[in-house]
Length: 534
Image (cartoon, one colour):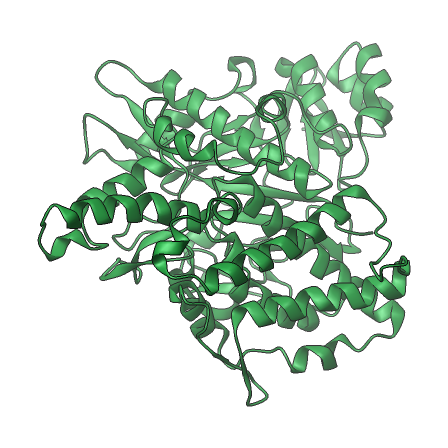
């Protein structure tokens, strides 16, 4: 394995009604999701039987009576709205936000295409839900500047036999520091934006614990929810610290670098490589404080206290993490004449080159003053927080040049309004982002993203999920990531297919059976499904 592994994203969107600034966001979310997807599939429910939100990777289970209600995601609201996207993904209401869960993919570039496909699907739903009196607008961001925050999550499958303490130690360092090249930028410091300023990440200020099971309060840097949606020998690392990027390069890096470090953890035991010892020199004394510090530090010089008594910068720690990947890869794959590991596939080679370029970009920005940073177009094409800063800083300077008051700083309402327009996916506001996006480096095409909104990945179980939905929509009763159940026949029998392995039920595995099947029940029987009597 390399950078390639089963992975996916989940994006929560903000939603507003233009004619009603006080509209209930929960109702607005239901209105938008109600207009997503296909009318023929609306009767199909989401199957929560395989979900276990209180099981912890640290080997414990929280008593359900002790869990906050918002943690019990397997107990849906009575009026919950689920929609099944044509690409094998899911769209639903998560608390006060419409959410898009992308289908399972097997490399970060595919994952990015399906991540951004969610923007198209959510925009279509918002436009379909809009009327002359109620026009819905959705935003790809993570915070409202008033204390509320919502997620942009990543999911990675990794081997369960890897020591979770090692994974935790590795991810605490990575997640606290990767924001120097993955951050999407945010106006305001603090959860409520109570201090004027600009920072690298939209999410950093909302994390208050190192490790924990919860996702919506006292947010932990490393989430321990043990719900793999996969065979028992695998676990899913559910990552909640990331920003909802609008640029593709940081989105790829967010997924790709994390996947490579998980690969290091998987390889270390087989190689008798003492990763625990290596991590002792990198471990942060206070990961939570470091995460806040890194996001607020636009100089990139702020020292971060290490557990061993020393200190380092976020950039130096990222260089060291990349060095770990190189060291292990050299042992696994060998090196070429230039000392470069012989990477096993093009995706891994690309991610490692992009990681190096990102660290070069940050180093160049670090040594530049603000006037020089305003001219750094190449670096801004890859660093989203920098591109966004240039746009907002240009407005901030223009306002200040007009002789405005002290409000002409980062707390100026016009600056905040421009940041919101950056996040808007409404066609009339897309011009703001489109203007700067033309200067951004691309890794997937618009055509690929559009195709990802309608076509499922061919090499995961998502392909079969989408195919049976398309072929027999009225014959299905329930669907989840791991199960598909048909409606009951006259005898009260229904058929369920166990799809725990995300690398099975691909296009190659099932296309012929889908084409030849006469019914959903017959199709599931042919693939080894079991009969359930109601």
